[in-house]
Length: 265
Image (cartoon, rainbow, N blue to C red; front, side, top):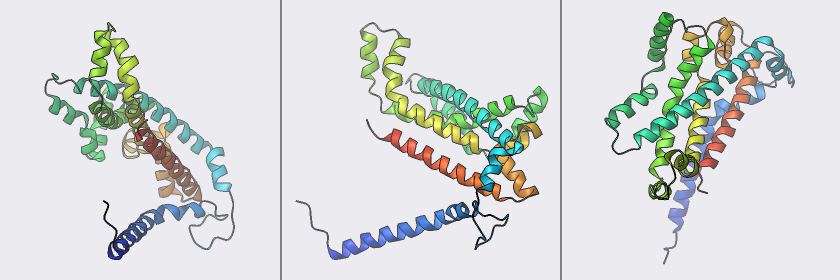
């Protein structure tokens, strides 16, 4: 028998929900306040606004510097996501084997980019690239972002593999299926939500990264975060707020997709 909720407990729960709602509003207020300003008719960051306009959104899609930055961001993020997803999935599969030697040490090395400060990582990669000639190139950015994004794939795929019933691949193998067929027909479909979640995290990590780009990218390899950084330092424009609004909406869509993938089917 379920005990009845007393008025005191009901009031306590209502107060807790109210407090959580206020905290959420406090955390989201700096993000939400920029959305109206992105439609400001004048190039000022002040309220009240004299009028409404979409000119700053037009500037993003028509300005050559913004279009170049968008192209570079999409190319780098897509390539880094593809590489990180492939390498991270293979690494997670290897680490899931019980007979893998030095499993803890290898896992620590793989996820170290999440722990080491980005400035230290960026400086180290910069000096390494300077010696091998990869500095100021999109290829160098792709490789660097792959290093930063792979840990997210390793963690999500490892979590998916931990919930995998090992008897299913064993049953497929006992029926004569070769290892490659067992992986593509049995293992991969079962861990696909984890792989896709890791890929989304990898894409966001690469698309929003700015510290490594500041060290490694040249004038022709500007990405959107670096273009926003330069715009804040050189010339403050509401176009930055318009782009921030679009990136916020993109992040919300990606988080909703990750949450949808986490739900059991």
